[in-house]
Image (tube, rainbow, N blue to C red; front, side, top):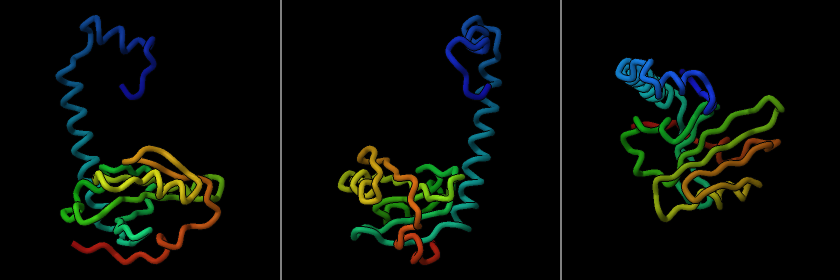
Length: 142
């Protein structure tokens, strides 16, 4: 079904009982399983450890990343925050920050790069240079 607007036919069909919800859930579970396995493999291959503002972080050059990208990391509790980054179509860098810790505010990290957001999820975009902490990482090992 993908992303649908409130007036799309798929919503009318859903509420009219014309769609097989159990089949949709089954397909959705298969998709989520694929994404989880893909993320685990990519994270193992692409992630690296670094530090910024005294915080330990795990990072990856991953444009489609989000916090769940790191779900397969067994040692994730050892990190203060997670950072996904990529070069956008305007030849500048976008950064996303996530944390599961209550004593870490990633919006402060994002603001140091001209960005903002929420305490547990934030970002910055349009950076002309990749921040040094992302250039000096060491490969992640579990």
